[in-house]
Length: 132
Picture 1 (cartoon, rainbow, N blue to C red):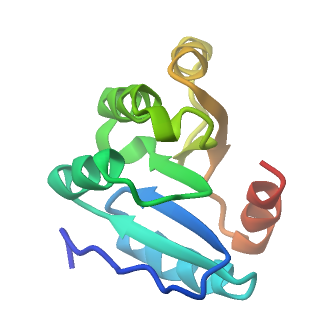
Picture 2: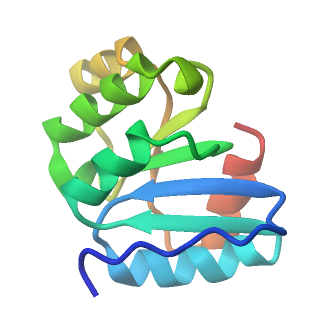
């Protein structure tokens, strides 16, 4: 369901914002993080993503799917960093392929803390993200 936004649950202890449209990944990742008392909020269209980035809603981690928008992911990371209340929110790029060194350097300058491969073993990915 493109364009859907999933509301936050008040009891969630760790909130993750995912910007991307990979519905299979969203479903699997939501299930994987729910075991860790995380709440995943997914924005699969640009308009919703901009609203969530500019909102005052707190997120503990932001995941941006680089496959979703390519260089737009860099703009979303920069926009997030331009928001005073998001300056310290960890931002991670997810990609189905390794990003080249130039893209990684641009991501780092945009405030991205790590570029991570979307992998089949989501428990491994969740373990890596827990320490970000």
